[in-house]
Length: 273
Image: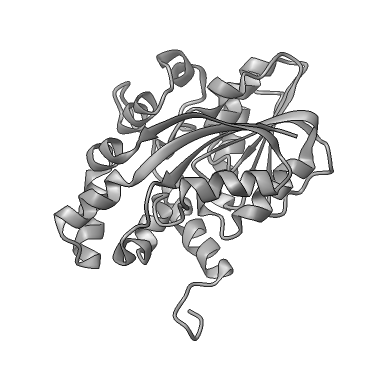
């Protein structure tokens, strides 16, 4: 902690890195109606999407299906920010075909190891996974036709820099398609302080209007809020155990937790360079 008690950017990254390393270590569920699949279905993935990816790539930690509204075409190149075990990368890889490529970037070694193993086991030749921060992407300017991300940018300490990096690596005319969590109003301080809430994609979220403004500041144009839906029902239902733990640790009342959940939206947004 700093002298003021706030968390530094690197401390924030370490909280997120440790949290996702634990998620990467989870064993995939054995059944078709797994909790991971239920989450995926609730946030917009079809059964065909879920069945088409390698086992263990769906970790149930997203908040939307960015590939569905990115609409990648055969031969295009797609970059996924915070690619995890590769779920969206593999879906994109099928869409762009053998003449295209789908690339993931992640800062967590355990996620990268799992994603690469998934790619090898399923025989994906048009995918690759790279280590890096989404605020400082390890790619040259104008490298991709599409940049996607699924519930990750809100975890980044410097979101303005992330959107500037998206602008940089997109080719002229390239497009961005992002699913993310945003706030309709500020979270209660106790929730905002919770490291567990941060890893659960809650406390890192910013106000929706500020999120859209950050995209525009980066130079991206044609910003379109494709869909805004309440994430509260999903949070209170599918993540009930985690929420109960946060309530107990932070001394929240159930009403405070429910109010916080009601203020969280899942935003699907597109833009162009």
